[in-house]
Image (cartoon, rainbow, N blue to C red; front, side, top):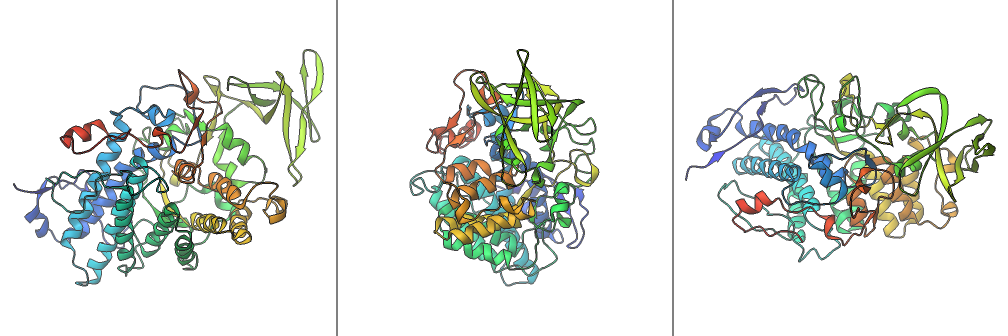
Length: 546
């Protein structure tokens, strides 16, 4: 049988120093012809990077939509609905697309790796390191989407097939979670020793992107000391700095190369990847910008209450309430049926008053300890938290709080280069690992680095004496939610730590029969079904998740 290398995405012909991608298709090239192409392993590697752009849209949907930072404002026939509401189906086209592109990228890395020889040249070593990193990254996410968290019997729970050759006829069963993690560690530890081109960073695999992924892998495995060790390596490298507080609002605006804390991102090109301004992008679900984008999925009420505790928190600058009346002030609360309601309020100093049944009343207020207040209302027999905004637009009764974190790169409405690893994560990996080891003050110190950058006043920084019944681990988890919303972390953070996902807030995930208000870490729904199409193609070699 004649083997072919099928590169679905165009192979990008790119010089080592250029930032501009030129596309030239190589479809079903016979293996011998690939060997004859000048720089073929480099081109295959660039093709693997290019294919990440096909992969990343549904990666985002299967990792971010099941979290508690998002609220969909309507139902849809798009299969993304099943990622959002946990009502899994085995023929989910989004999940199948994610699986298929993952293995196409793995096939591309395997093809490159079979042609590279360690020690033959610096370029071979560099490219080998990059392909090992890409393969490890794909397997890491595949295992966490289709396999149970590592702390749940990794020796027996199944993950995904572990394909390490370029043989297209290979039909493999699912490996265990432990086996896939072991291969990820093996590949990353080898890759760490191979990098030698200091110019290939931020949008290419690098020693630091490998170390950042190693820190995350060790954290997920519960090897806290190793997680700290690899976090230290990246932080102490001196190659990355946190985005300044004043520049945080431009988180998505700058290219990956201009983001000082970016370690690895999947780069999208202005006016090239989305010449139509991008209606079918990650950001297009979150906001309508310059008449581009659906703008149907908003920041969740749960996230809003967290991020608005301190008015100075710059992370709120990545959310845009859609105002329809500048002159009307409303106190928005959530009713027992998890729908929004509001009363019109008038401001006087720090107080807000409203009229109920002809009687003037005042909102309850509680100081946040830093000169601002959180407000509640006694209504419909309960005390309810309110968020005070000018009159907002809504869709189907769900308030439009646009998410801007995934849009606006270089001024193009729906362009974004999704972030895989950045420096903030290493601080919070180190904080989580130290919290679990009982190193409380050290953990809080790292959390406070991120909170200080976010603009939280001193009164809002954590000390051992102001935890008020919370643990250091609790505040690390809270900070991870604040910092990494809409970056594909939250679902994994909850379930890998044995926590319950609580989604008791307005959104269409609570529509229809038998909605999931909470999801236990041991529930079947924590992992996606193996796509039915893939099971059929395997002739039954692949077994389904329960």
